[in-house]
Length: 329
Image 1 (spheres, rainbow, N blue to C red):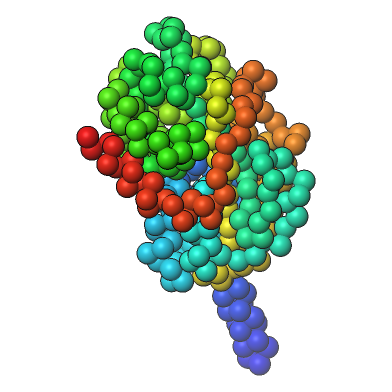
Image 2: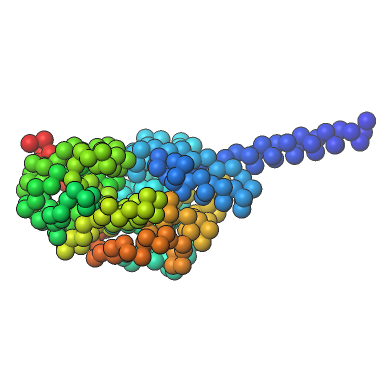
């Protein structure tokens, strides 16, 4: 009997260790990332195979919703990783004091502007654009100013209060029109069909013929070219430039697996993960040499417009109020 007790104790310890090891790495992200056609399933399978662990994605509507969820939960959040806010929201996220240094070298990554951040890891990027159906639209505006003031095209876009693309349009409008953005919003509002909570709803309505153009990305046509074998949908290129969006991820201080969280961030910018991004998230990968569908060869690479996240944090409430006033007229 003396030799049985240590064996039982060892077995119990092994069971406990396995139970601890089985605790999933929880990732807060947005819904389309974890959809069956998004990058989430492949990213999850790839990292689980590498780490021998379990990854659990929790999908929320959009990047702004992710930030709001984290703001509500604070240090009691059950998440280990925040994945899917964009560069415009970094300063607000950092101010919550809930993210950890990632300790990664990101200097080799390819991004639309100079990137240096010790907590947020960029994993893909894009430029916002208005997508149109060229079988229905032949008077394509050549600038944002023309779309706003001199076009009769109907428009659908997303709510800047809850949607990162919607916020991107708000920042795009501000970067082009400056102090006259309120007048530009009022002019655009005359042709707005609806403002949706998120990208999916807006794009679906556009494809159903509810509007002439929809706010999306310069790379959106690549999806249709790749999977539907059609160049029917195109992104209008604007002379002022296009507002950039860099999507980022960070490890959270609430995590009881900080090292594994950092390993996940490292995996996110490794070639196996980066090879997945372009053909599932339909954004540009940040790693040079990562795979992209052939259709990306013809995608626009426009001039980049952007505000630093501190400027956005200081002004976002006022700019949203400016938009809301115009949108309610």
